[in-house]
Amino acid sequence: MNRANRAAQFQPFDALKGLQEELRMREERRNRVAKKEVSEERAEEISKELIKVQKGSNVEIRVEVNTPA
Image: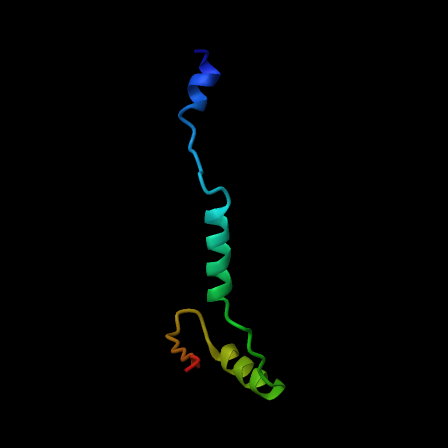
């Protein structure tokens, strides 16, 4: 048996070709979160607060997550 044939028998075999990629894509779609838009006024408020932050400051961030019932 030549070297190429011998190496081929030890290559990984994927009996369900494409399954792992399909599962990964489905998981990504399930975990995707819709981007929420903020009003111009709220964006301005956030911007003003972020400008106040300095290197080394302690910052508290609260995120509200609405989960479907």
